[in-house]
Image (cartoon, rainbow, N blue to C red; front, side, top):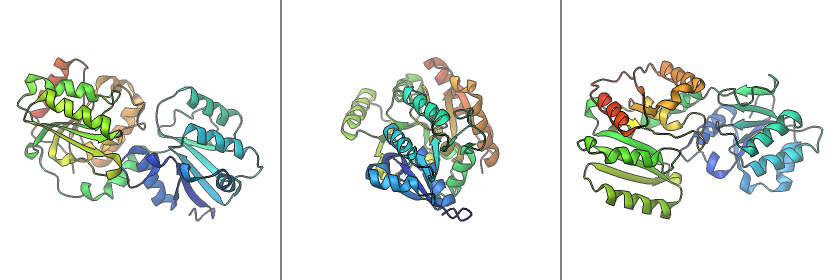
Length: 327
């Protein structure tokens, strides 16, 4: 509850985005709001038209719209236009992705629904809004606060040379996240002596399991581990077993502004390799630098070029590092 304003805080979004028992970027934001605002979780799928109307027209409520579907957001905007007095509503934009539906909602918020407050993860998306209506979430501090309260990041970490996995890919089996590029890298004979791991989060269990089985048969090497898990199981990666985490993202369209796995891997003392296109994203670099400064981590983030030769050269150079500075 918002004690100062005597408002009851609620987070509304798709169940797949705000289930605080799951792992994920929007889930981290939901967890933070639950702690900070004592917010209740409401899944949009279970909210009928009458209940939504009651939530909107009560100025006793403070509503955070997080990970909601575009259809739900437009429905909320339409209902809010029917009342002179509405709840304090804050729409949270979590990704850097902008498509036609995003632009349409942005137009509505900017020009028509001016009572709705907005926020994002770096201040860019809503930069044209009046100052009192827009705010920025400090994502590096938010994630760091959550990780410090997570038991798996409090235990003693293995020294760099004691970790038994040389290279790992962690994430979904998604082209935009670089899953297939990571497979190509892992196949290369120049890395045949490295112990490798694919730590995969499944969305479509049957289809993606068959892809994993085919990849295992194709690689047919003894020094690679495939570990698969469903998102709902909330089983975190074992970062402290890994020396290098390679994340060959094509873009950030399918994730929040800064993917959670980057923060987690750095916090666990892993070296993180990212594609060189990210170096041009000044906001991203600023967010990560802030996180590194908070945690006194140095020399842990490196960038590779897209060619297999350059990528493998980057991996080999970082594997010889004997010490990573982390607390």
